Length: 357
Image (cartoon, rainbow, N blue to C red):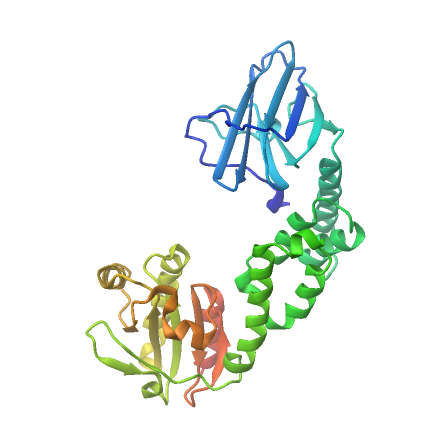
């Protein structure tokens, strides 16, 4: 399963031993391949990419470190400048206070982990994933989120991997559909109190609540709230001035990588349908007027743009319940929202449907 094909691709940086005052995990490994001289561990922690390495002495290596919460890690024999082949890579789960052993066969990836509850549970999750991948080609189902992560959480309520499974269940929280909010909340309630009470979990709940609230005000079928903001020349532009045309209200920013990646698709749509009455009104979450205007020029965004240059404090962010960019709202000639969150092919398909005649 692709979500488990975990590897840090930016391995050009030198490996450095993690300076941890109080290690809370220990890995002891035994290898049979006499050519293996060193092993390398990597994972994303609270301070970004974390790496460690250990010498293999008499076929044995030991790694110690500290993690604040459970997380997926990669163990490999490939050096810092190499991307490992599958036979040189083992995915494992690090959990505070665990000491466990790994036995490797001649092929490093053929490994058996013992003494780790977390890795036993991780294998269960991988088995569910494998079964799902084998089934999905021939049988319809509820989708990966439900059949892998949701099922795992319901069947293993005391697992130390619940938070990890939930993160995979949610995926991009900004993409949760309104009809999935209740189901997502029910799965969230499966998490232990210690996880649900964390600041990040509470922020996630607030996001779900906001989605419900704004579905009532800026959901599909609702009238688009009118507003006025200044364009790049400082002239006021009002949304209702576009009445009579289909208009894409496009929230973005020059500093937003996914927005810039999405812009070529938006440009294509604009040039294809503009002569048929399609308009775009870009709303930027920029702070720098210079960066905003430069991105417009560089990305060839030849439609109307507005911003109050207040970053996430842009008044339209709150008005439209925008929790992440890129985000957009497709508005019909009568000023009603008929779609939102259209990206890539979804935008092209929706416009093709509208302008099929």
